[in-house]
Image (cartoon, rainbow, N blue to C red; front, side):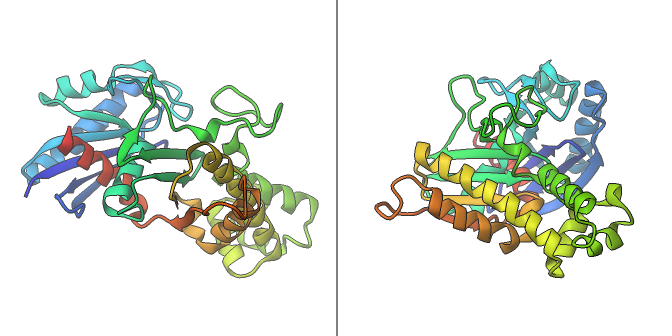
Length: 314
């Protein structure tokens, strides 16, 4: 059995785990992301890897990072949610500190590979994995291989502009898909409802205390209780999600979409309106096969598992 360590660097946390050949996570560790100090972030990654290596004989190390990774899988060119990361030579910095080579990958690509190898995308050679969290991440597996694009930064449909001149996005453009179909969009919609339709949002406000206290967890709990305002918000986000999936299908024609991320934990509250909109928005609908839209299986471990497996295979 060959053990590998996968590290998943997100906007708020650094998660890591020791993973075996079958995708099982044997040990876990977690730290808060020091987002304003990229050098300290390397310290955190090195510390967490050293902790796991002291307890397990793992040689391969893979790191999934939230940002645009160059074609050599060595430099973080840009990270919308980690402002200090601009042309950061992450692989070299971690390798120097650990004294061993590491594999660097975009975090959504790592999660997609994990789902393809061991999760909801198994046995599907053409899979699009979409993670709906603070923003929208995406990983593309085409013909059984991870697709990165010529410059290494392919598979970023969260930054397709779906509303010309729309909401400001962290990438610098206006009207990106993730501004309408993400956790950020869900909270924004709920706060707008609570401000404009206070009677309809009574339960939301009761749970949150006030408008500013409304977050994704509150909206999900309220929707699960059947709160009409919260359900409307999930319908809105789900419709935007389904429209985006239809646009991706027009370009790539995958056999399956796997939807993960924190917002996707809501299950059918999100997936049903997404599937419904996907079906009616699909080009050539009624005359072509329709891809499955299914929930992810690996949950928060997907990025860790995928990064470890990519490190093992080089």
